[in-house]
Image (tube, rainbow, N blue to C red; front, side, top):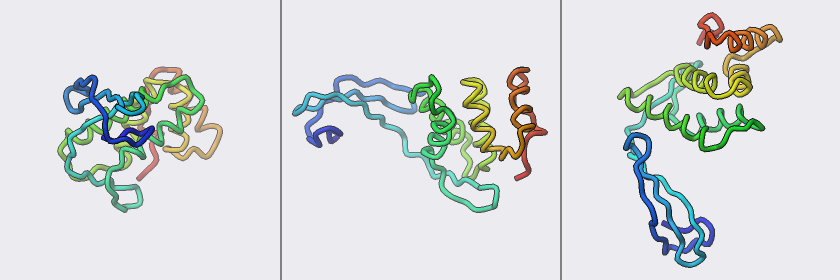
Amino acid sequence: MRCPYCKNENTEVIDSREVLEGSSIRRRRECAACKKRFTTYEKVDHADVTVVKRNGTREPFDRGKVLGGMAKACEKRNIGMKEIDDIADRIEMRIRSRGVKEIGSSEIGDMVIKELFRLDPVAYIRFASVYENFESPEEFRKAVSIFKSGAGRKNERRRED
């Protein structure tokens, strides 16, 4: 493993532990040259899952897109990248544990919405406004009232695929 700071190839593993119920290994490493420490993760390379988008197109599942959408929704909130990364891991694990070859993008969006609902009200509203394509202030008010009531995401708010 090459050091991300000085690019030296001589690094040493100083700590290893299982994470995500044994589906991944976290390794803490130290560079022999610059002595800086960094973390790497080792995960099983699962069979590809295809995402079926609302317009019918298909593309490979990209955890980075899930992560990016959540990170955008959580911008300027008191939410660490580790929390967002953990949610992305849980979502990916749920998808892969199903053993399916295809999944609808709306199913993934629903998973993200539920996680953000539990995490932070503002992040939830931000993500929902894009995911649900809010077009009026009334749709924002409705989403806020659902959050305040603790009722969760209502099916009647869901747009047709």
